Image (tube, rainbow, N blue to C red):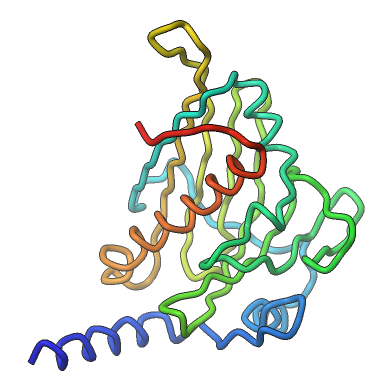
Length: 227
């Protein structure tokens, strides 16, 4: 009975994501799911539409925090300048492409040069789900606020989920007066599947943002902990 229940649950999860998932090719510099997304949506990146997010009303909410043993300016520099291919690389995340409006060029993981994070960039990644499906995830770097130390990503309208994510950095200090940078990663999201938003997206999203932040920390030899 337990085995039948597990099979049924896996079937439900597969149906939930099957409308926008593909099997990863593994041979191309661009994952198969990203290639399919581009075939379906075109490459006129300048006219890609973003989610209508307003203030976040009507969206589900997720928040996770990290503390880094370093001053805020150093950590901010690291977030801005870490190679995106390496930041978006884990057992869950495969880098797809980034459209860089500054030079109107598209970059893949196979390119020798990769522009750092910048406003207006369009990213299309591939997220591995259950080790079977690869789901394309498309978003825009909508805002990089150096004064307030905030980065905002907004999902594109043709993404599986709509909404936005924001990364906030704040200066703090430990009990000995040593600098600590506090990082909040907040997400507002919704899709057409209530079951997915409540039971599937939150833990899956948690894993992906953990991978992203931990990549930034490890690549820049930062020590961190979860408060």
